View 1 (cartoon, helix red, strand yellow):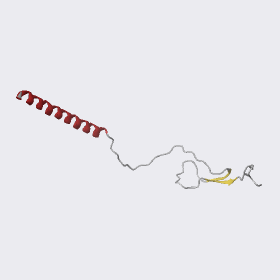
View 2 (view 1 turned 45 degrees about the vertical axis):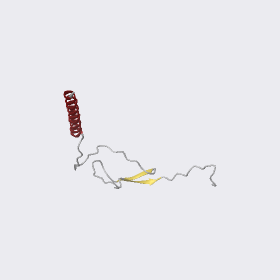
View 3 (view 1 turned 135 degrees about the horizontal axis):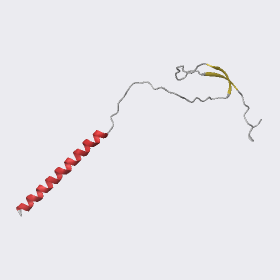
View 4 (view 1 turned 30 degrees about the vertical axis):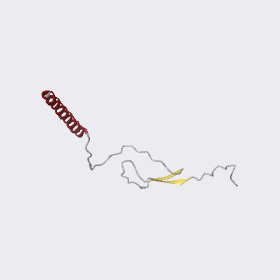
Length: 94
């Protein structure tokens, strides 16, 4: 009986050891494949960009040419706004 108990104890300890090793291996494998976040400095060259206007009108002046460097907020062109009367609705007093 004593030998059976010792055998069971050894099997339990061996199984626990194998499970612990598997858990450690899984943690190490996961940490190896997780990408590391890195901050880098650099510049991005935009080859094409779409610009939209906020109001319709005739273009009076284009202030930049192809290849010019521009920054956010720079005026690229000026337009003569076209004023369109708003459509009358049934609820309008006019």
